[in-house]
Image (spheres, helix red, strand yellow):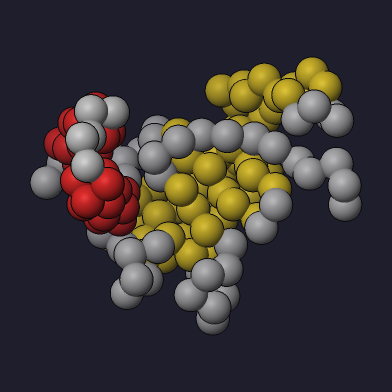
Length: 134
């Protein structure tokens, strides 16, 4: 499956999710959506998010090393309102390369972390937010 096909499948499920009739139907579609997110195929240039517990950093996939290992770099951002969490995400990349591996639970976790729920990579959206409370 290509990256485009995997994202098309996710978007088709998300479109169906808007029209559920029973709670069981909605729960089944949510399970399908979660599986589709785990099955996403990364490609170079894909916009993504690195999730650090309460912070989110906008990033871009810069290299697909193997089917289960990718390299990403942060996108540059411009802060519009720190306390409201409003940022413009710029196309320029900054910082060093971070390596993420796909674990047996389907999550992309930063290489070198032993926890199955450590610093995560979300391939299905791009967001930037720095929690002002820390």
